[in-house]
Image (cartoon, rainbow, N blue to C red; front, side, top):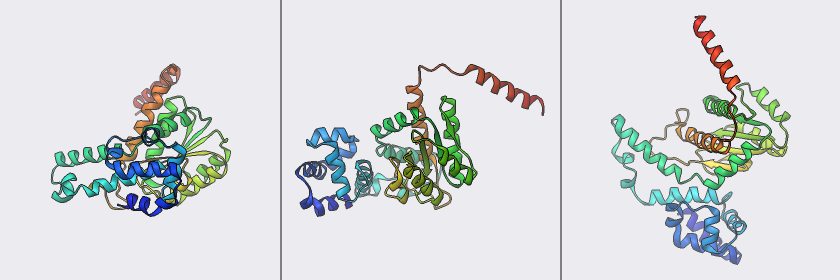
Length: 283
């Protein structure tokens, strides 16, 4: 496995604290994934600081602990053999089988979503002065939906399909703003350049993606990656976006929990209801 071999190859160059983290991963890799350890839990188990764990991850070629864990989880799944993936070898011939396989892939992807990262993203979004969501092509439908739902939570969120307007909006964002970028592959040029621009301006960035170690990751302050490569994954252009939608739902759920004390904007909802009634009656 790549993670294990990378640790073994770089072990001699590690500091003692880094070696403690590496030793735990070498000996208890399956436990690390099955129990979905957070970086703080790993630090407590191996006796190394979180900074040492991150330094060890970067030493062996990963952006951080989340990236290492995603790769390790996928490698362990592949090692378990085809009997674990079911539909990968048997094929899917009916709706029920498709749904069953989809649920397996969602459960697998859930292992890769770190609760501490989710909490950090929620803190960043809730306390942000301005939130811009961005994606490319049909993925922007998800970004637009996310912005609308954030606005329903009384947060200053923005999205547009107009490229130059989106980039100019970034130019107007304060350092306390946040860019939420959604890219299934992590290779969309516009999204990556927007993240780079935001990073250069001191704006925090959150990347929602299905692909670990993609070009977009280098510009992300926080990474939410599902890393689903199961048999339901489609060819380029027809990719399923259900995993990205699930991450959006997760963020909205925890944002709503954080903002429970806020009163709903009843006058706004009443105005929208009257507008919808007017559209209906005018047909």
